[in-house]
Every structure is written in C-alpha cells, then in structure tokens.
Amino acid sequence: MKEQFIQEITDGMSGVLTVDQMSQLNSILLQAVSKYTIIADGDKVQEDIVSNNRLLEIFLSAKLVEGCSSKTINYYGTTVRQLFKYMPKAVTDYSTDDLRAYLAVYQKKHKASKVTVDNLRRIFSSFFSWLEDEDFILKSPVRRIHKVKTGEQIKETISDENLEVLRDNCRNSRDLAIIDLLASTGMRVGELVKLNRADVNFNERECIVFGKGNKERVVYFNARAKIHLLQYLKSRKDKNQALFVSLDKPHDRLQISGVEMRLRELGRNLKIPRIHPHKFRRTLATVAIDKGMPVEQVQKLLGHVKIDTTMKYAMVNQTNVKLSHRKFLS
Image (cartoon, rainbow, N blue to C red; front, side, top):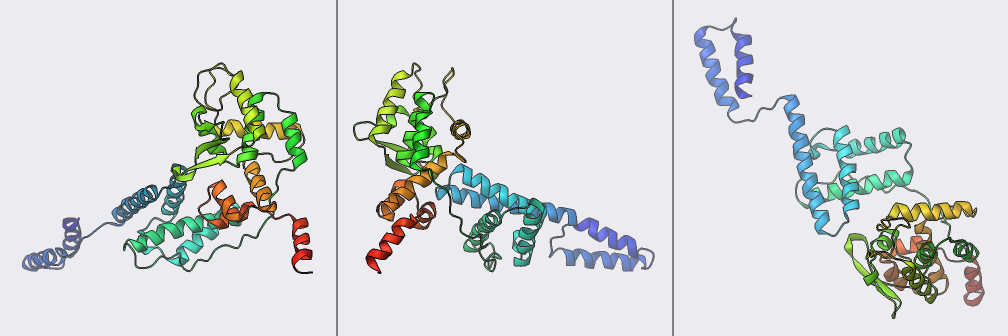
C-alpha cells in the first residue's frame, strides 16, 4: 500500500519535476511513509469490521464465563452485530449521538416498543461498559443514554376458577400433570422440559431444576401434582428418561414449543384468554406474596438473582391493601 501511495504521487509529479528532483522526492516520501501505516478506505472499513467482531467475541466469551445462557449470548451477539452492520466503523469511534440516532431509527423502522428499545440500550450499555472496563475505550458512549421509560402494566394471572376449568378439561394425564406442576412450582417452561424422571423426589415432593445460566435449585410441588404426575408416569409405556414426552411415537422429549402450543390450544378452546406457561409462574408469585410469603423466599423459589425481578412478577391483591390500611393506618 505504501508503494502504491508513493507511485501515485510520483506519477502525478513526473511532468513537473526533473529526473534528479523525482529521485529526491521518491527518497523523501519513502522516509516519511515508513513511520506510518497507510490503509485504503475500503481496507479501513474491513479492518474495523474484523477488529469489532474480535472484540465482540471476547465480550461474549466473558459473558459465557459469567454464567449467561447460550440464548442470552446469542441475543447479545445478534444485537451488537446489527449495530456494526448499520454503522461500520471502529468501536472506539462510536459516540453517544451515534447510538441515540441508531435507537431512534430502529424504533421507527421496526415500529419497536419502548421495552424493545430499552433492551437494545441495556445490551449496548453492557458491551461498551465492558470495553471501558477492559481499557479498549476511555468512556462508554452509552453512559449518557438514560433508561427508556416504559410504564408499568398490571399483568394478568390465572384465576382459581379458570385453573380448575383447565384441569377439568385436560384430555390426557400428561397435560394435567404439566398444568399441576407449573401451577404448584412456578418453574420456567425451559426448566420443565429439561426434567428427567430421576430428578423428581416424590417422597419429599420436590425436584431439582436447572435455571438460567445453568443455576441449580430445588422447587416444590403439592399433593395434587404428585398424584397426577404418578398417574401419568404409570400410563407411559416408553423407556425415555424425560419426565414429559410427546403423546405420539417415538415419544421424544417434549419441547418448549410443544408445551406452549398445547396450553394455548386448551385455553382457546375454553375461551380463556392468553394461557401460556409463564402465566402460571406469575400467578404463583402473586398468590404467594398475597398470602404473606416473604418476598425473599418467593425470590428463592423462582430462582431470581435480583429481588426487583420478583416484585415485577407479583401483584398485591387490592382487597388486602384495603384491609391492611384499615388494620394499620385507620
């Protein structure tokens, strides 16, 4: 690249300078450019892409060591690579205005919700803060981009009546066992489908699940769930070690999508809106706090790292607020 750069200059001056002057110019240029690296515009962009992707890979490796799940790491990687794609320059050159503009354009182009935009902001904040901590940049450009105000929405839970209706209308023992296990443990659907028969302790009515980041914890189920789970296992003829399998041969391990589709179909047939696995988890948290279980214990039960996350799952019954007001403040 240096030789090409010098050649272009000397070719342009060949009709102006004498042979001796051209030789002297060539010597001076060789000495001058030896101190610098010269990169063409196209090569500069390509070099930035390679450098940026390398930094991203190191960042994702750090997140893996910290215990983040593969799903989270893939989400981080996809999000940051999209930023690189639409803003192809070195990460050291990114400014706060660049990122603000990107978020604004993304929101308008994809008609994204405020929650989605704030998720992008959090991922960028994590990435650039890591770059700052590792001394790749002086200061994260995301520092001055504040949290997006999303507003608080009261999310629905499953009423006692609807829960009984769901149970009464299950057409097979597997679906009934799934509903009872989700309702009594509050486990995630991803944790449910990973369970094996050996993970369940029927004497203690508990089972070991592996949550986000492969964190292990114990969850507990009630007597009704125990009875229906035993009935389901007794009815099975297959040798699969998975706790829940498909109804049809070859009876493979049930996947997340299978559980979601079955519950959604059941709710739709019964005219019960928005029945999905996570709603059982939210319902358990709400009922537990409503009945007086300390929020720290609910946090442990659900496997949350931060107690703020637990509080978002739970709604305190308004009737109990009224009674407590009369008891303590009236």
